[in-house]
Length: 325
Image (cartoon, rainbow, N blue to C red; front, side, top):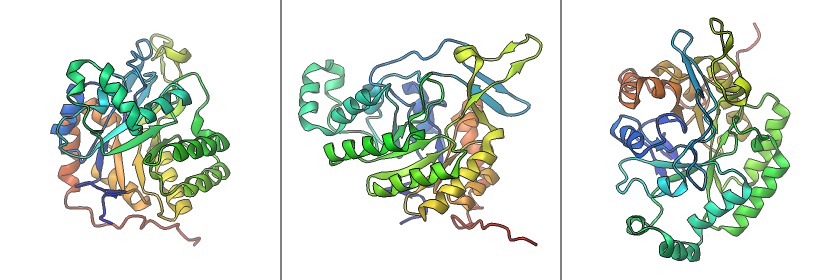
């Protein structure tokens, strides 16, 4: 296995965008393909196009480098991302959320049921028919951890996840995916989830950790109000302040999984040292969200690559627990 590899997909380096940041429209995806990222991830999609929550739904503090969002799964719809791009320039990861399990299964059926694809060709508009030759993506990232939907986070329910995986994998022989995970504050729950992930380790290709931290809040003291409107001002916390939590999650998952499932680290990355911290803790790749959204893909990935290119001398998972003095 090469250093930067997920399943049989090779990456030229460790840097990806995070689903949700500058990856909603085809133009934004093209910006990512033209940047020095080593792969491209789409916006987490639902079956049909969705406008997301009402504005203001995103906030960034330029001093603390923290962000707060309640985007609400704004996206172009599953087929919008499935059929793009026509020419793969680098690994392309399709992020799937879905509103519920029925919708997720509908998406899987379209992807992996040959009869469904035949029927779909008959119904799609002519300009999409010519593109429906094969699935254009390299990997799937299944997002079961969105904190902004006013419903329980599925990735906190091990028994439900186990039953869903069993059902999906039995029904679709070719189905594989990675999982985007929330932060887990309880190691016992992580151990329960570990047992499930290893049960399906041949079908679960990677774990991305972490999604934004649920139910954060930032107050505008001058206006005496919350900085975002949806969900009563609560949103997913991102940016620099979540890095320490995200690192601990990567380190713990690497320890629990014994390197059997690759880990993608995500949270608070703004420079090459942040990337190296994740690699030391066990990450194979990293995703960059807030920094890409604020600077744009070209500048963000150029800044990190310029200082990173000569510094990948650490071994993955090399970080050890400090002994008592």
